[in-house]
Amino acid sequence: MKKSLVLAMAMALGVTASAYAANPFSDVPAGHWAYDSINKLAAAGVIEGYGDSTFGGDKLMTRYEMAQIVAKAMAKGANVDKLAAEFADELDNLGVRVANLEKKADNVKITGNIRYSYAEKDGDIDGFSNKLRSRIWVKGQINDDWSYTGMLENNQDFTNNAGDEDTKFQRAYVDGKIGGVAVEAGRLPLNLVSGNLYDTRADGIVASYGKDVKVTGFYAKPTNQGKALFGTSVWKDEVEFDNVYGVKVDAKMGVVAATAGYTVFQDGAFNEYYKVGDKFALLRSLDMDDNKIWNAGVAFDVAKNLNLTADYMRATDYDEGFDRDGYVVGLSYAGAKAAKAGSFGIYGKYYDQGRATVVAHTMNGEYGNHGFKGYMVGANYTFAKNIVGAVEYYDLEDKLDSSDMKTLWSQLVFTF
Image (tube, rainbow, N blue to C red; front, side):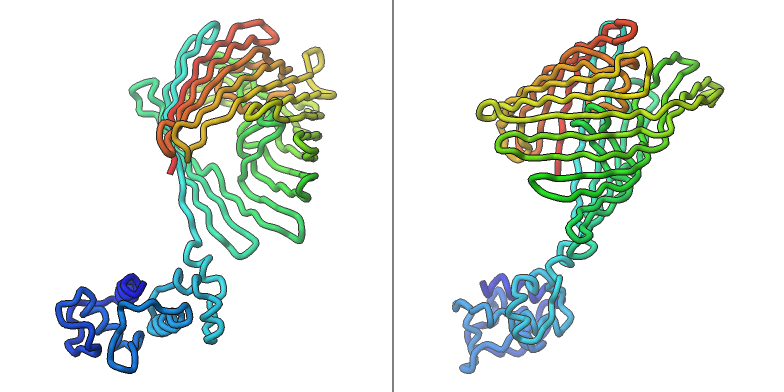
């Protein structure tokens, strides 16, 4: 223990070889691996040894003795925040205030992943995608109750030789508590109805209260609203919404997790764009009714590692003449865990969703513009720690024109 302490303190104080020639301890001869470091620390008054002029490097020290050394090193300006956090109680007893040093030592954490994905599209959507996505996450502690999260994302498109890529700041939000209410605010991830209604970023605020029964309210501007309703290479029609707000309740009842909610996509507009040069210009915009969706769902284990989910959605006062219901049923077994090599999972879902129940879907398949029905099956596997692969197959049909949409999608993700 003393060996590691001597090295740590010496590095923190910037020890240079042979800084002091005097030998203060009889049991640390010249040529000893720690001779220079011990001399430096002794001269700085950080270590004193024992009264018999020995250092006693082979003896175990108490936490109180070590706290004294840490306190002296701090007084000399050494950067020993992690040690100060470990011995905070003992240092407090010595009158050395080190509140929140443990947070300062690890105040900012950086994580990320890189994902390569490839998809083959068949049926009436013949084509392929070939992409590399990199994400860097930064999380910083603001104080005991609040933290900041940011995410930078780069996408590279390999479907041609143009080197198309973009880099965007996709997340930037704070989260914490106000009394017993958990709050997130900023450009944050918003997942509605298990991602079947909406699953991407949004600019706004989310507040929730409770544990086993949790009530969540949200108000935000949707920043990515899925696909065009109709389109060609020179024109496209889109429905866009200015705001989204709603409330949901999640409850745990034994082995069953239940959810219910109400969501409003507000101030909708039907926008028609026409291509001018290499960009689409807005030709006209028509106001539309708000898209109001009720939803309810359950999830529970039917056997060990076998989970069943079911979600229902109903849109009201919107998209007259089209199917306004949405059903999604899923079954999954186990699942690949990034930290556990060899872990795997298999899963599948059945979809039957009117287009009013789809704003920005979470799926990786091509899902059309007018609502869809069909199924997907998939599997994932952890090849090595933090290296996970997945393959998914989608067979869907457009609910308006019955076009056939098939996608074989795969990915390999490296996480750090």
